[in-house]
Length: 405
Image (cartoon, rainbow, N blue to C red; front, side, top):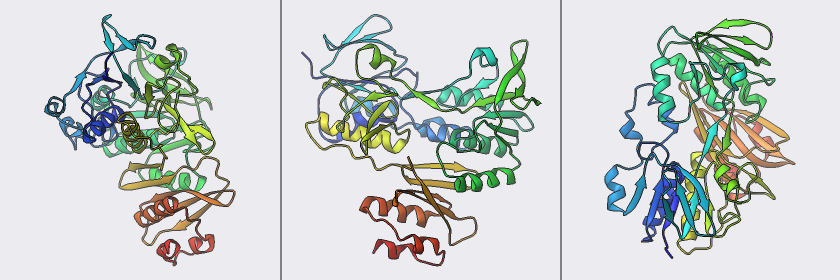
């Protein structure tokens, strides 16, 4: 028998779990298995500052290689796990070798949804934006004057649009829903962000889907949209969401439901196996959600590490997110799932706004656009369980601090 912790997945959650265990002075052997050929790194700047050439890749690494040696953390790159043998507590790698584990952690993340080959998804020039390889491929395409079609008007698509415009490309965004950010934000937030993009000469076409991509000799050259129009393009970026990497868990007999089902301690249906990050479906207000964010990946992995080290404190998500587009910082505190009322509050300076979400009269989230005070105040209210007076919120001249008293 071994007490080795094997972590499958070398992203944010996988690294955070190993680092937290060492910070807790846990000395058990740790092996991280990563599919990419590079050390664990930050993903958010990858398609922003890295793609813009403002940050070198080595600055994205969580830690240099020496850290893993110094902390007795084995990391195997370019390594795929083919099977989990739960009865023998072993993982089987692509070369047929096996690793024994005492505890196993699945931090396998998620995969961007692609387009089917039947509508041109396999053409050269069709990209997603997820990892270093994607960013490097996109960097070669992002040249001034080129034409890019961005499929999907969520945060991923809008962030890609902002980077492309910054680099001087002609940008068209299509969104098949009634509006951009339909699934993740209120109409007020979407309206503000749409105006910002249009001021930067991004063409946004809502209620417009993709009929098919047009290729010539296997290379993308155009797109026919759902309204029958045809546009010429040089390449396309697909931003239509992600799917959790839960297939390995499913094949091993673990409970899976749009993600690997975990309890409040990040344990799966097998008590010796944990899951954290994008791949995990965790308890939330009587239901179950997946939180696709750096905050959740780190906090849930930290909580799981504390349990693995012998603790028994449940993980209580306190979601926050952010999105950088041009010189606009959108900060989100809380989770707006099921909201039925919103309130738009102008900020103290030009271009600052906040959108406050309520569910059955209860404050559940805030979107702050270039309004750090609203973000900090809203986040604090959520942490303290304060339900703000809507009449005070609606008064732009009021001081949010009085709501925290």
